[in-house]
Picture 1: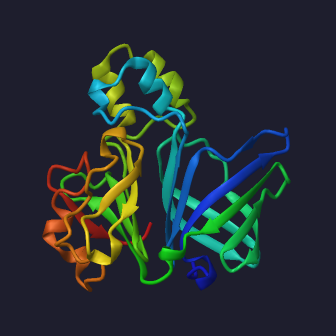
Picture 2 (picture 1 turned 180 degrees about the vertical axis):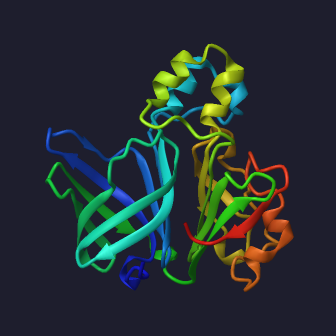
Length: 258
């Protein structure tokens, strides 16, 4: 699979989605970080939850978290058709393709439409996301089934990490939570992390601005001592040993692109 065109690189924030039904949404916080091959996408509804650990949130708040979306994988671009091959997903896998027709209004404004015209989206590229752009797929050292990635574009980062156990395919996350029966059973269902934020060119700690885990907002993914532009960033033990809220027991290791 070839690398995506340079025009796509950076962080894109969705301004609007309009569906054929007439429903529109400009409130959900949606960020798509695109590197030459890897991508990650985070979608957090506007109903803000308190910055608490999953164990401290109520059952109703757990159900609210089930409305979140987030995924990561590899992007393929053929002419004006863009397809996102999801290799990890916050929601259960349902077999649907993630594919759209793309048109650049300007270099920093992208229009995406469904192939069947069922939706229309407007994306704006964040100015400070232009610059150094790279990513690394990750795998748990002691648990190879655990997948993750760390992506960087300009001043921004997006870290993604799968659950300890994948969700059953073709199921519904909200329904799984309703059937879980106890807090101990529901927390693992939500323990999939996608955290987006800024490192400000290495001049500040890597501060998380938006995450599938409410307790992460305002926290630091990595300290300021970790240089985002270091050539050996993805080989640094301090980065891979315990990154993320639910890191694998033995930490992460670099893995080939999925």
